[in-house]
Length: 234
Image (cartoon, rainbow, N blue to C red; front, side, top):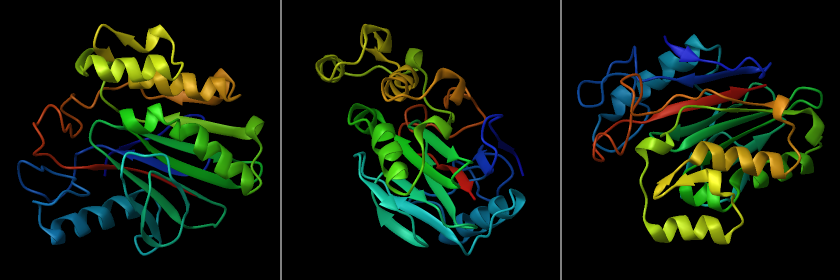
């Protein structure tokens, strides 16, 4: 099973691609969600992928993601929000994405992890900051938090409205987060991390665009596409 990892996250984690699953086109092949693929295919994909990464398919916390900045204390099953945090061992945190950026957080000293889903709305609402704050409430220390940003849509492929650009400007994001109407969510999330005290050496980005063939992309596929998972576990 193919998945990608970060060199700065020391605990078990995975950014899964769309490869090596059982779903037929247009969800071919490792689809973790969406409404049109069969539940049986999605369940089998999740099981195979998690086992391949050393995670227990029966102990997964996931989200009904709503493009906000609500952070949940993770528990097995489905919650509503856009980020999860935990200090519980052997509980997998799962974030679904297909252009939005999955962000994984790890404080290896205090054994606390987090995972966030950052589309433009969540990025604007500083979901990464909220996740760090929730981890700190569990006992994490900012100086020990390492952060990995997975695949997402690149700035050159992500054109938004003038109104969205103005929202980012009004919220204090720097001009390097957009070019014209092309919004760079990766740069915007990096800015949020650094303005909240995360040293550059403690953050890492995969730097790959979801419009590449290896990934699902909501925008490229005009809405009819699968979902990938990014997962982390103590």
